[in-house]
Length: 150
Image (cartoon, rainbow, N blue to C red; front, side, top):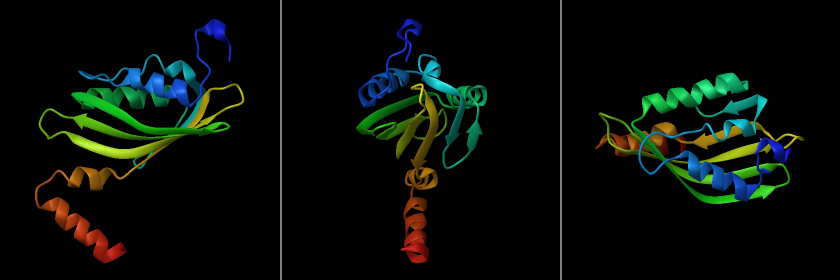
């Protein structure tokens, strides 16, 4: 990676450092310092969407910022195997009218040959974590899952 562009070499340690600066302890997240680490042809996928291209990825991040009042992330574990970095996290979203919603998940980053993030796949149980915060409904939802799938 070209150090003259003020970029760090991406590895488990620098990813943890960069992501820790993204999610403030107060206020909205700021991804601006990490966008330069994403490949122009980034492929992002999570349980909701698949996005291709850096411009659309940045737009998605900006939409998330406007929809939440505050976002926090705690990285629990992080590991690297060659060009794959995986980290486990708890992300707490705060909305204006709804209770704080912690999501438990992990992210797999795939680095390209030039050291940029070429793929990002986020894994989490969106509905299960949201439904857990709804009195009585969370238990009904879990019982349904166990009955049908467990």
